[in-house]
Length: 482
Image 1 (tube, rainbow, N blue to C red):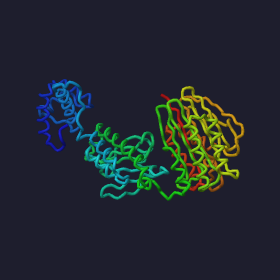
Image 2 (cartoon, helix red, strand yellow):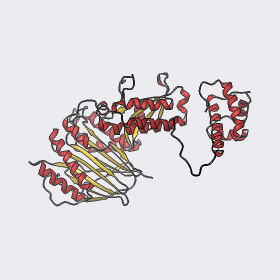
Image 3 (tube, one colour):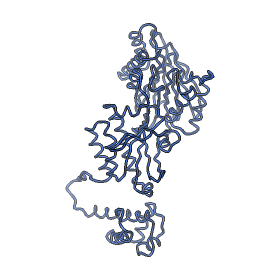
Image 4 (tube, one colour):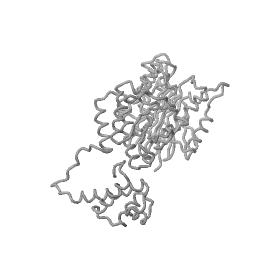
């Protein structure tokens, strides 16, 4: 495409000259231009080339793209062949060069340099980039400070355009304040970590499909680096905290998998509150081609003791699962570890479940825990109340593994009693009925599991005035339809 800033008449002259080399008839040029999204008719294009009329800048750029693509085709066709295909040299411009620069620089950079690295990759694309990460409560988007730039005020997830991008996972343009920008979701796989702010030179650039796609690529790489670089430094993690964490919360959060994960068949999303002071609640999952494993736990008590018990339970269940042991043996292993390590009638309630993806056969054990909810076609159709036994750690009595058959499109909701037992100022429970009604509305509104989890936790907090008396955890697994 002809560089920006070239006078219109000079651009038209270059276009006409290039058209002769491109070996395109007027009709062939117009057809290529039309396929790229041009709106002018054949006569308007001819008048533009003859200097009798002027097309818009966008239509002129589309004509340039059509001619340039044809010149590239001719150049490739006339190259002298090698004895074998050779890979192209390292790019120095364009989106691949930007991604390579970012990836290579990140190999030896501390986590707090990530904003500068992202900004440098953006400059290769000709845009100005700022990274905003979401806090752990998923209520605010916090700007990472860049080169010579201090962090701005956090932006609310609810009621703002950047927040809408975070919630929906969709790229959106903005011209607020006279600043043309693209807001792009930061997704590490399916895990939502924030949004990327991309400032462009002119409003017309907001509709450039190539730029939008390139910004998606850059945002995906930045999101991956936010996650991977955060584990060997504290800066990115501290930015996402709204208040100090208790030792028990620090321990539990280190054991959790990403809050959201997905395959082509399943989406799993979870969240814990109070984020900075969670004690005994935890969740786990494992996604595979043929199976899905789900676990939700609630250890007795509060504080560091509950956190230690929850972490030990999680580690035991994972260890048994990764050793190839079945659901029954996993539960017995947890029983033995809790009883031996935390004497004095300590216990953990929980649900451990395994789904065979090929058959839809769900096997689960419910140990003194609220029954999971099964949603089908947007409605709660059943509580999975079978498979009950005493809480984990109170001996290893005989118990049965319950079964249920799921269908593609079903949602499975696992939660701790801190959700339903949250009380408002008048002492009213949040309750099972309110939970069922909330889930029904969320599905009807088209909210995916990650956004449903976020909104549900907020509803529970609002019901109890923002301060929970007990941990509240949610884990939703959705079997996607194809």
